[in-house]
Image (cartoon, rainbow, N blue to C red; front, side, top):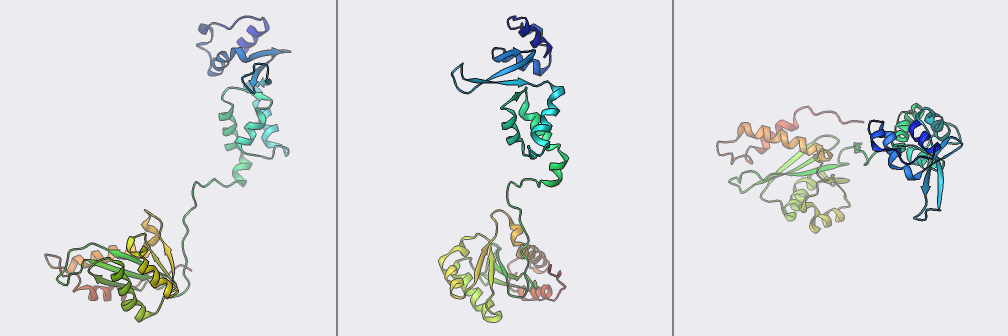
Length: 282
């Protein structure tokens, strides 16, 4: 800043570009703002205009790098500053001071503040996903549809999967289509009539589960409904993991044309249900 101070004190015109082109970025920034600079008692100030009126301005003291830490201390560290964030800190400092790249240096100082780092949590751009913990059987049943698979001799193409999130007991039914009537009828006749009505059904955002018939079935049986997150199959992980296991088991026993998978269904399901499952988290 010494070149700027010298020219301003002697009342000289703006220095030529050749005199500042090899200088620092700070010097070049001040050179571009020459018309807004003034000097008072050996101190360089910058005019901050409130409007297009050239007479409506306030003076901001240009702070050299060696004194900026003092400014940071009084506008961030002391109790009257309150360790506020960079935006609030910038707004207050701009009332009195200025220097090139001020916002960047203020943001960096706040990030490197040890006390702020130890007491302020990081901002989350979106809510983190949490794990849903179940406490008893039939509290929550996860549902998914696997397919389409090859059409079998019995005209089945899909698999309706229901998994108890607590016991990991899984039921799977071969169905011809994924229409809401087929799904509602299968759940009612094959699952609910055998095991009873669950407290909650968890499924993805498929159109079959959003149909009015399926909604009416849940309302009639007083079953609560939850929907998994879009484009995030992990939120329905109980059945998604089973689907992969089921497909792996079926490939060992299907015929060459792979059209008998629904005939060996009961046996592979028995093998899965009789195996040891991971204990639920408590």
